[in-house]
Length: 306
Image (cartoon, rainbow, N blue to C red; front, side, top):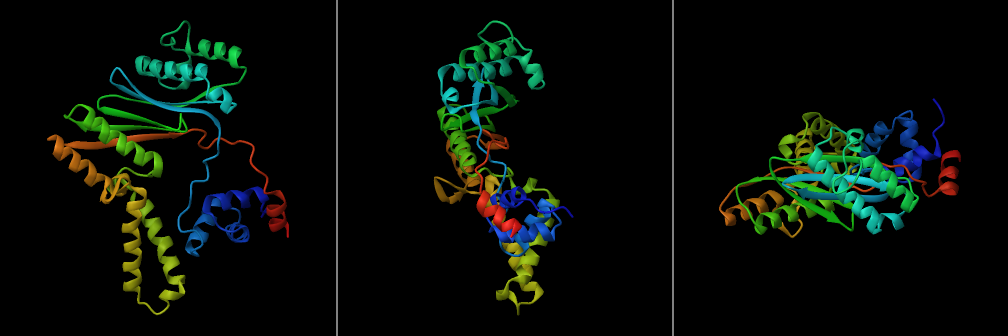
């Protein structure tokens, strides 16, 4: 097996929050397999839950809007926060969103060929023109377009995170928008993995049960407990897990005595019409984009090679 690199150890450390030596040992044990190493650390109780390791900063803007009844969410990247915070870049992103709503392009390449909303030429032309003004490379990275439901957009910290919530309801007005924004803020802050526990894949649950069972058996506090008790402990942990990873089961951030689902149902009762959260999209600026990383050099290299 190839030697374990300092970079791999550091990535596992960022993903799990575990110590460097524990991460190195897990990678050695898993023969360099990252996912197996995460599982090993969790089974040992060293990583209670794997964190998302791909949240590496990149500049630009995540943006969400409703244009003529169509929900749009888009991420556009650039090289510096100076350009990202400028009016020219913001105007470009807004026009791109309008174009997506109007033209319904299949993908980014198709979008670039579309006529730019409120402008001359194509989106690609507008992008090139903006480059001449700001002298930075830009990239329309991704977008989603939603219609046929009530969409509520939310933008956090001038585009650090954008959320588009999809609601199904006959109710109208500011009260519905308030519900949507409250749910969007929850999604922005806690980044749920799933909408509802009913949509969590069985394979995901089975894997959690396996990991938690191994961890429970290795916990010295459970040394004399029978398997039936350990099973209850594991199932209790799974039930708690739903409240951490499923939007509708999460405690509502504005009133943790309620779940998000209970909050939405209470709001629907007041409005006299059912409200269903059909889905959501969350874009975080720079999510998963590699940038120059701080070098833990001395510490990590010493740990790996020592």
